[in-house]
Image (cartoon, rainbow, N blue to C red):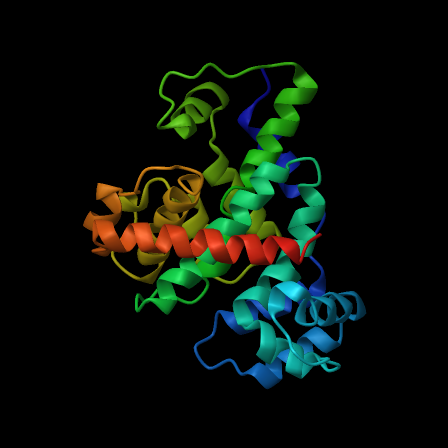
Length: 264
């Protein structure tokens, strides 16, 4: 069995994010960001500019006229989709062999945006924390596959506990290490670290962020369920009623289907 330090070193060796992605992350976690600032930053990255224009003119975006400027693309798509395309391209390249994990990561991020749109108030940076919350799983899966090791599962509802018991570290802590290596804004690595154990954090924005990520994670895991969704911990932590949780789940599924088309 490999050691905890081996996994941390592997997590820190992942390719860095593009500079434009890290800069956009810093901008969009501020309270006073502007569309103009986002557009100017995105325009400095030719590859990102191309992705934004393609996305803004795609059938999934519902555009009825040709969009030719980054500023108009940002206005058409909205900051969450721009952030998803910016950060997502780097993360998606890491997850090229993990399509299910990638879809779940995007869905979790979008769920936090759906929660914002229905009147909840995730702290700045929650969308980004949700997008990267499971990236530690990528490192664990790669390492296990190369080593020919399979983890035993004692509790399907809490697989991260098996990771911790058998590897000395779980995917959440590894994800926090990766977020720090990628120089994501302050608070995001801590929220990723604790998205399965927010009770260990002091009350404040980081704990709130971790709770929103946990809620979005649970909602996204339930996207393909046929029965209505309700998680009592989401009600306890965020005060979201069962009927509203189901509405968020349905809305997230619709938005996810649209956004995933932008990556194909």
